[in-house]
Image (cartoon, rainbow, N blue to C red; front, side, top):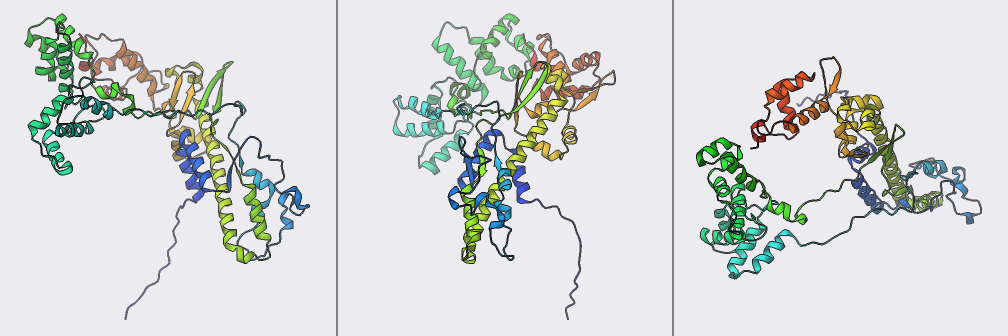
Length: 498
């Protein structure tokens, strides 16, 4: 006999409603993606409409004047419905309720006459097309052309061929049914490397630089590039590590001769495809979500929403809902009634989420402006105060995760440049005077020290630590190294110049 035990447990779970999930997703979207998201919602939900000019008047009654007053203002007392209905029709037909779900994004500092900016669509020749066109001008066999096109198709965004030749031989055989030896592929690769821009088709940086120097020497026999070519070909490791003293000693050249040769190398392009063709790049346009203006010593905050449409719940759908609900044969139209109700609900939820998003973004940015007011007035990065997500969250009464979503992928246009919101967040340390200062202030001083150092004898992390200590910022050497790496500054030896 099986004994079954029934137990009852009680537990608490936190579940997010669909509206909360929708709001969190909208909070994370930057302005351009928000505009696209609104367009998508307008396409899928006929109960959501975009206001054009003044076609939606908040004070205008929703009902038609020709109804002889039967449905004026959609008074819920005039609608007959059963107590067993699944929903309360008054939730949909009250005028003030409709007003609450009319959403207007445009602000007073933008005119309706302003034309929304639309980036032009331009069709351009791809970089691969450009190389294949050059290849077609050469006297090649059909097999060589196919091999060359395959090589060009495998170049990365910088113009390098990272796939080994033996692998290309296998690829040609199994994917294109072309039988070719490594020598044949190498012969075609040499031809690809003769195309413009110089350095294209190189398998590594060393080969890329050497191809460019060789091309320059061939085009200008009087150019004295022998020493530069020797350094790249035979002393590339020492060159990359900036062991210039070793190179000068091994080649028995003076510092002046070495500097001249190095200058020629430094003129070369390490990314030939990247610089020669903008159509191969992914161009990202930044549309700031906020703008800051300083007038008469006061910081003014504006939200950027000039290309975002006004939204409201469709009056025709509201009328349709009222007609279905007042029908004597309401049961037979239950499916249509549920469809209309669902679309109106979705429209209301979406508009409400947009409103909440805009309000959350504004109060968050306002808190950032209040905390960093000194920076916005002066533009001096050293005036930025230590600020973390928790500081803003406590000030506006929101969760830290919400502030994080707001700060993600959002930008603000200031008189001193366009910055991501994350720019204004930084941790703090205590200086010699006991005051808390932002790590950004320390990084600014560190950057200035490196920019003004003796390039022939750059400072080590230990020396930078001592300089910061003299300025009243007692931080460890490893912290200096961390900040230097975050700023993208190489170690002292790699910053050395002759």
